[in-house]
Amino acid sequence: MKRRIGILTSGGDCPGLNAAIRGVARAAYEMFDAEIIGISDGYRGLIEGEWQEMKRSQFSGILTLGGTILGTARTPFRNMRVIGEDNVDKVKAMKDNYEKMKLDCLVTLGGNGTHKTANLLSQEGLNVIGLPKTIDNDIFGTDFTFGFHTAVDIATEVIDRIHTTAASHGRCMVIEIMGNKAGWLTLYSGLAGGADVVLLPEIPYDIKEVAKVVEARAKSKKAFSILAVAEGAMSKKEAKMKKKEREAFRAETGFNGIANRIAKELQDIVGVEARAVIPGHIQRGGSPSAYDRVLATQFGVHAAQLIEKGEYGVTVALSGNNIIHNKLSEIAGVPKPVPQDYQMIDVARDMGISFGD
Ligand code: F6P
Image (cartoon, rainbow, N blue to C red):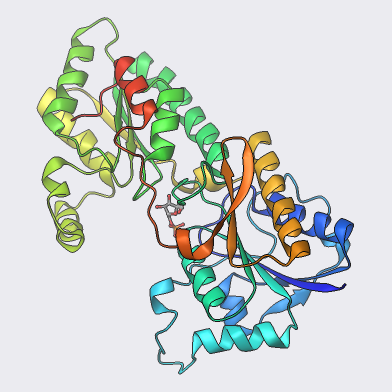
């Protein structure tokens, strides 16, 4: 039986998207009579009707390629049901284009927002399968998302390289790691890079506690300090604020990001020479690691297997060593912060790493 499969990548990109696209396509071509439609720039392409019939050759040579061959865009879920100035009913447009493409199913590769819209489309009657990607690793129901481990490798290399220059100068280096709502990337790379202090959105910090660590190190033979700070890390005072209030407070401080602020605060309190380093989107760029190539391929193949069985309304996930799938309705919109009792937090604390709390 012939099946027409639409594929889109939505939200922030990450390494492994192409490996996952390739996994879906190659397995589908191998397993059944498949036609694949590539939709441009995520839900934007689905709304505006931008797609192309893909050739088998287009899925060749992309395993190691970073980014996404389909392009991506952020199309916020909160606006999906809102009719804007363009007067477009986005949900209707997506359903109409799904019909126009004569799709049997839609495979959506993305993070939390992507999954919320995938669930909406599934509830609207479309056959949808999600694949969880993000360097943030904050998708509920999967142990890991693809893209995460590559970002851990990159962030760890940043910390490693900062380590030597920090040691040479006896400086305090504050490295801002991506992750606004979840600190997975900071926790893993901080541990892998041997950071002295790890600050996560999930564990509000007290700058005085952080200063104590930096001061003790400054007075010791190892006069330098390495701080791995999640971009969404917050002080205990900020943690008590509502989101809007916190944003206003941050805007007032005038700092470009949390690392710059913490570096200045530590310079003032401890008197050390401090520098902020913001690797930013480098953490999302380039070729996926071997781990992510394997995981993305496993996810892609699992999606093709689900398509063969006609099982939809689900998203693929990793549970232990097994590839499973969860109902979109059960995972969409559910946050996955680092749990307070996550074993690695204890491991880090027992290694003498401070969370500034
Ligand atoms: O979701 C991935 C992520 O890289 C986050 O870690 C970060 O907060 C955000 O995207 C940055 O978004 P943008 O690429 O739109 O600047």
